[in-house]
Length: 215
Image (cartoon, rainbow, N blue to C red):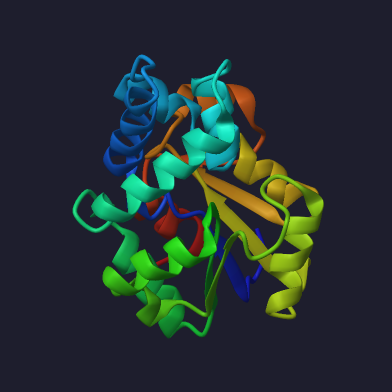
């Protein structure tokens, strides 16, 4: 644990609960093509690698390009209605911001949608910036994506960390030498995260903020 100047937060499952909108949109895409809609639980367990990756796993025999097109169109209609901020999100962002630490959203959600939803929820008040897929050809956990996220803010990886909710987040941190801390508020519970990763795992952002940053 170091004196961090940059904290890269995952978005879905870490700062916000957008799973209902994501599930609705994948269900709509599947049904539109005459396919069986995936359950909410299956969608939550599958997300994390970007929409095309998730689509290919949920509908392995379907036209992924068409699934993504239908998903994105429907998502635009529900993205503001089916979203919640996790307990501790505003607190940790505000506290770190007041300490002079740069908060950055680093997500596999499309960058333009991530920026829109953060503005809508007013989380951008405490953010240095937002990096998402579509901003580059890369995504988590590709090293090029993490390097891009660091480069955008001239951040030193030894003074930076990633906070997320899945092994993707740990991998995206480790490939460039960043520390990682995980919360069990998203797609993986504590036991799974402890089994599948080597990073410290916390129940939620409140617990993490106290333990890691002394808030």
